Length: 185
Image 1 (spheres, rainbow, N blue to C red):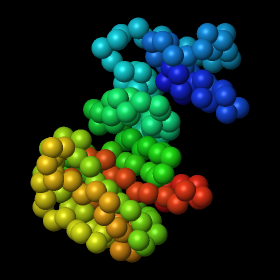
Image 2 (cartoon, one colour):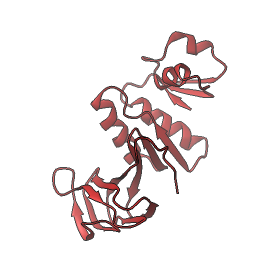
Image 3 (cartoon, rainbow, N blue to C red):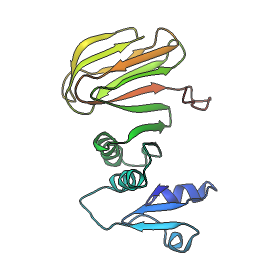
């Protein structure tokens, strides 16, 4: 499933697309005749990422992995993170240099990583009761906010990192080696 212009990148890389969702302000015109379903949504008040996530949820999937969210423009990156935070789906994100997970109120998440890995926990809204373990600078019942405290460029101390969010939504980012493909252990 691709969001609008993301289908261009997949086709350029030699990958097929089953569904293309969006307002089609970025997708090349040849996509309209491709061997895939086209879900056109011209609503300019929602991003193509919003539309993709709504489509995935409507199809009954409980989770989604987003790739290519870094795009070319910082406004698209931030908007995609906001879309992921607003979605009810379990959202994972494959970044160029790591993996991300949207962690919400009541969630507990544990991920595998190599000791010494860069780990960041970035609040996408105000977060309370935050616990971050397995890192150099652990958090216990912490308060985080986009315009306040964050846990950026922390460091894993072992092979697992865990996070709990009492209230709020945050992005857990775990850097991966540039020469090694990411895994979802």
